[in-house]
Length: 611
Image 1 (tube, rainbow, N blue to C red):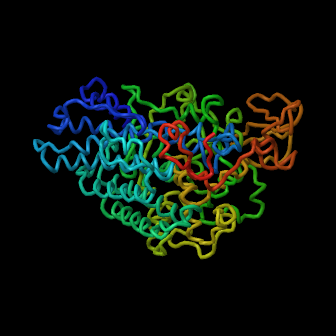
Image 2: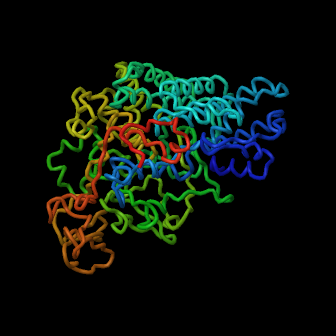
Image 3: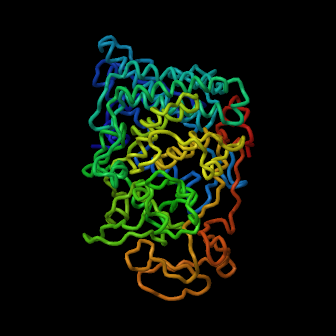
C-alpha cells in the first residue's frame, strides 16, 4: 500500500507518457511547447489510467497534512512567529504558489480524451477524474489568491491572449469549480476502493462538501467579499455543501470508527498502518518495502527538525468534561495544574496530547511519556500522528498512513452548513455533533444542542465583525476545532469564518504554581520538570530545568510565567516580534516576478504592494 503521490510518481517515471508533460508551463506567462503523438495515451484504458495516476500530484503530500496547522493556526505555539503574520516581514517577493504545471496536464487530458477506440463510459470516468483534480487545483488557487485566470483548455503557442491575460473574477472561477465537481460526481464510476488511496464517487461528494462550505462561509463572513453582490450567493453554496454531505451520509456506507474502545478509537485513525476503512475515505498510504514513509514522529519530537508545535492552554480549555459539562465552568479551572486539568475530559484529549498514563516504548521497554520540555514550550505536546516507539523519532520512519478525508469531516460540514442555513434539527445534531462526542466518551448534550452560548467560546471566537452569539454554531466550532486538529483545516477555517485575527492570540501553556517546585506531570511518582529563575535549584535525574526569568543575561527570555513567579507559561509574549493581522491578508499577494512578466495580472491583491 503506497503513498498516493509517491506511488504514482514512480509509475510515471520512465514511461513514454512523460513526453506529454515536456510542454508544461510553470506559470501562464511561459510559452508552452507542442506535445508528441497522443495515440499512445488516449487509445486504451491502460493509457488513460497511467496518465490519470499523475493527477494525484494535485493532492497534499504525505507529510503536508499534519504540518499545515503547525505552520499557521491559532491553537499552536511554535518556535517562531510565521513570517506571514510578522509586521513588515512578508510581501509579494516572498509569495509563492503561482504555479500552473498540474493544470496543463489536466486540461490536455480533458481536451484529448476523445478517442472512440475507448468506450464512452470509460472516457467519461477518466475525464471525471481529471475534472475532479482540476476543481481541487483551482480551489487551492482561489483560496490563496482570490481572482485567478480560468483556463479550461491546453494552451497553444498562439494563445497569447490567455497566456498574458487578466485574472477572472472569483465567482466565475468557483462556478467552474462547481461544474467540474458535479461532472466528476456524475461520471466517476469507482464507488469503493479498499486501499482508500483512490478517488471514488464518494470522495468527489466529500470534496464538494468541503469546497462548498468554504466558499459559502467565505462569501458570508469575509469582509471584502461580504460587501459585494457575490455574498448573496453564500446560501446557495452552503446548500450545495449540505446536499453533497447528505449524499455521503445516506449512501456511501461510511461510519465513525468505534473499534478498539473509546480510549483508542479516535487515535487509531492516525497511527494505523492501513487506513481505518469504515471512516477514512481517502489516505496517503505508506509502504516500508518502497520506503514510502512519513516523518510525523521526527517532526513532533525533535527540538531542531520541525517547528516544535505545542498546543495552547486556551485551546485545551475547549475540551468538555465526560459528562458534557464545560471545563471552563469549573471554579478554579484556570489554576489547575497539568495532571488535574486532564482528568475526566473528552477522551480525544488523551489521544491528542501526552497526558498522565501515556507511555512510550524505548528499545523494547515501556517508559514514561510525560510532556518533554526539551521539545515543548507549553506542556501540551501532540501525539495525534506519533507512533509510541521512540525508534520512529529520528527520521522519516513512520509507517502510519495519513488520512486526507474522513467521514467525521463530512458530518461536521453537514452540521455547520445546516446551521448556517437555519435548518439544523435536533436529529441532525444527534447524528453529527452528538455522534462525534459519543465516540469521544461524552455522555451529556449529545441529543440536542445547548440553548445558551458558552461564554468562553463566545469570547474566544471573534470575527472581524464582532462576536458570535449563536450557541449552536459555537459548539460546532468547538467540535470542528477538536475533532480535526492537526489535519490541515485550521487556517482555511479561520479565513472562511472571518477570524484571521485569532492568529494573534497569546501562546500560553500549563499552569505553574510556584518557582523551584518539582512537578510530576504524569503522576508516576517521579518529577519531570522544574521552573526557576536565575540558578537551577538542583540537579535531580530525569528533571528538565526551565529558566523562566524575564531575561537571561542581556537577552530577552521568550519563555516566562504570566505573573512572573507563577501562572501559565507564556511563549513569545515577552519579546514578541510583533504579530499582525489585517483582513486583506486573507489573500496572498500575487508573486512579484509573475506580476512583472504579465502586467495584466494587476492590480495586486488589496493591501499588498509590489516591493
